[in-house]
Image 1 (cartoon, rainbow over the protein chains, first blue to last red):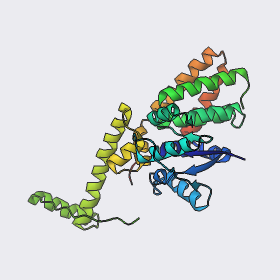
Image 2 (cartoon, rainbow over the protein chains, first blue to last red; image 1 turned 135 degrees about the vertical axis):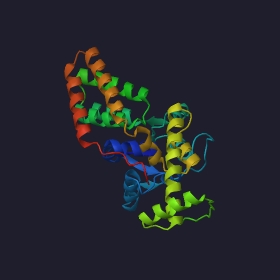
Image 3 (cartoon, rainbow over the protein chains, first blue to last red; image 1 turned 120 degrees about the vertical axis):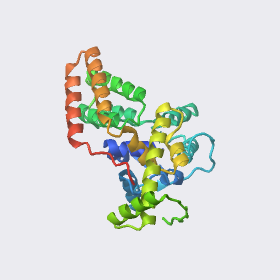
Image 4 (tube, each protein chain N blue to C red; image 1 turned 90 degrees about the horizontal axis):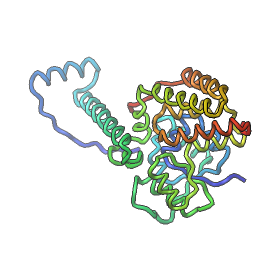
Length: 165
Length: 130
């Protein structure tokens, strides 16, 4: 049984654009909030893929009972609130400040660079595949350079120990 | 999606009106349709630039910026990199070189160089219009 997860729109878009999305869908049982869905415009590539997966019932809509925070945008508020209400889930989130707040609230938050390193650690990605995805994320410039640098350093350490994919 | 149309009146000087009439005719559009598209394109460009600057300052999230501007989150995110995605790859390679040196694993940097070649070969120009 796959682990439950929900996401914010920046994670979805970065995952789609970097080639990480198939691994996300393989690994997690992914639910989405309506407020996140409304941020994914079907006239753009990642939005089109999102809505096609919704039409295929590959993604399930689950909304938080209460919106627990006042900060940030609607999608981020909903995704964080849903993750707080489902503590066993993973929150997939790339925007740095909402990510930091989610972590402070005790949510298991994961961003795209960390997920790439984890997939390498469990040998789901080999080193070159992981580096290609991280390089694509670097071109997007929508991931904090600090997060990317930390992920690369960790990838290098795992690679050096020879324990990755 | 159902969208409501709103009316905006524009007063033009004679020369500007003549240019508009001629340009709209060349595009085989009515003057209203021409102005509607030109105005929206310009508004989007200004808002994309504004949103990218706010994002780089680090004080607004993508979701907030989408609410502020009426742009799609993906439109804002796509505009961040623009044509400067090579800068991201340079930073990536520099980091990988440092890590390879620290870990005494030069093959890590060689793999990173191969990864960059793959990305360069498959990079699709970003779409920023809608």
